[in-house]
Length: 105
Image 1 (cartoon, one colour):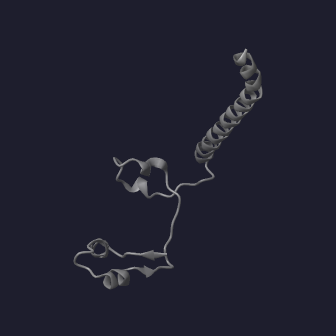
Image 2: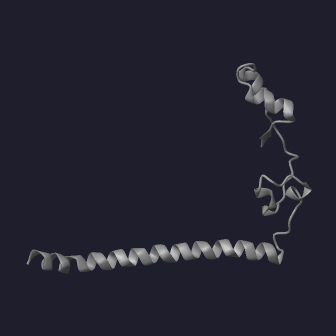
Image 3: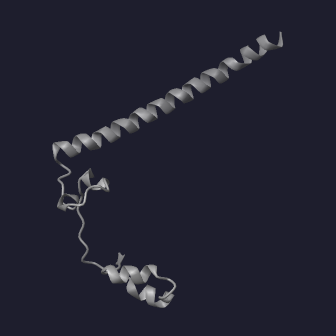
């Protein structure tokens, strides 16, 4: 993974008018010592700018499990609705020749 190190490198990377392409490409270097961890949804709000935004969360906690399961349940519900719509369309297609005959009379 390549990364820019520090605010000045970020500014230089974005300043394409003053920084040549070759210089900008020199700024990004592979990094192997990057660490990551899951964080809470607290970080999703721009109003939040505290240590809690970067605090690691345990994905095995009951809160996180219930939150993740809600997403799975919603996806299942959406899939069920799509299947119902498809079934309804197929039923309408099957009945449409009968409707056409009635309209022709």
